Image 1 (cartoon, one colour):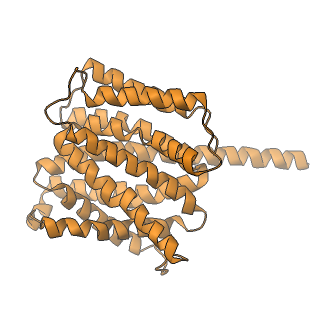
Image 2 (cartoon, helix red, strand yellow; image 1 turned 120 degrees about the horizontal axis):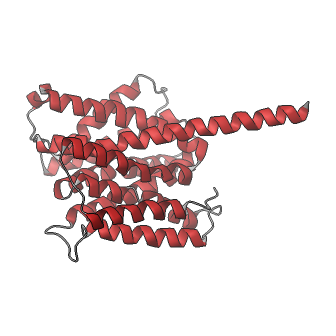
Image 3 (cartoon, one colour; image 1 turned 90 degrees about the vertical axis):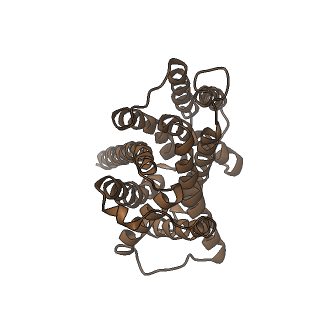
Length: 306
């Protein structure tokens, strides 16, 4: 009887794990599409920081309706960590990603950001006791870095006119790697709703200095245009409010490294959507570079244990 009960518990645990894996897959598919929405908004006259601010204000207002009344973390040190979560998972991550879209293709940004699981693993190896450096991790990391190089050089022997966009995408990727690791650190101590609200709050606060240097320019009447409000609603309600909340839950259930691994799937959504709405094409060597990134991430995560 006990053996049957134990077997049933194992089966339920496996089923539960698969459910969270499916959620992670859905989230990164949505996030892969956000790059195209952001690029459409850029073409329609919004600035990078304006796009981010509008989507996060919308997401923050939504989460206020479901968040508990608790305002602060348990200690001031934890509160400072929450600030870092807001910067790495919010302001710096999104603004660098949006600025990258101004200088390079959405496909490039997506594939470079998809390398963030490697950064998460390397940080976990350096700062946690559970991550062990394996041969697959080393080979996968080097393979993915070669792939990133091919994407950055866009399949030619020299950098294009402006490599700034690809470098900004690397900054964005590094931020998300740090964010995933910090999320795992605090996921067992605070609720996903509390963490997500903190991320949105500090992301908004750390974005405000941008408007001191460069005041808001986009005409507010522009939000009445279908292309503007539809993409802002998608970015704010679905990609930010919904996906960030679910990402905190999935990270708590599956672990930071395993959850971060799903980022390698997001470029697939970016490619499909960008070809439909932006007409962006990839040359042969760039495709090879993308394949190396995906293969490298999968190899590096083959023997991961958290």
